[in-house]
Image 1: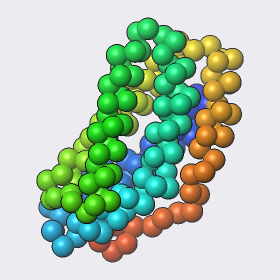
Image 2: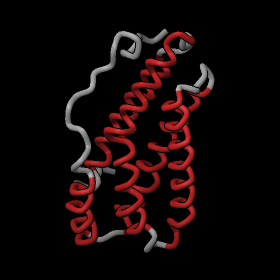
Image 3: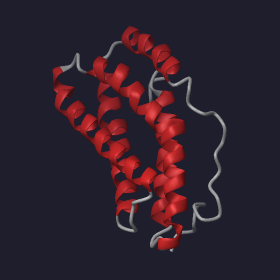
Image 4: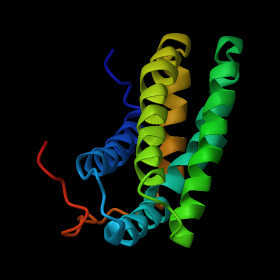
Length: 164
């Protein structure tokens, strides 16, 4: 299903986060000496985009979705995943991720994004009428206004590696 224009700003941010996940996956196995650089990038991405994204979902999108009882259990799972992903941020900020927890973080984030895109967004587009979606769009854009719009390029350590 084509993404409704009201949800596109969130989907664009999902693409940025998925790119990080792909780069982590392709960098496997990550040398212990590269962990700090990856954790710095995760910390930066959370501060500049992901945390603002989570807040917009939790304050605007999820309450709108709660109006539909069939989505409540999905929402509870997504909120729990936000908490787990924020715990990973704490690990990255403390530079305590390991060669096992870093790729686990990427798998969790990727799975979370795919669940939102394939289950929540698809279902919301079926359940919400055009006026509800149109009302949500500008509020999401306003909530996402503080996202850094500069292009943060990966460095030599975190750039995309060719498939092995």
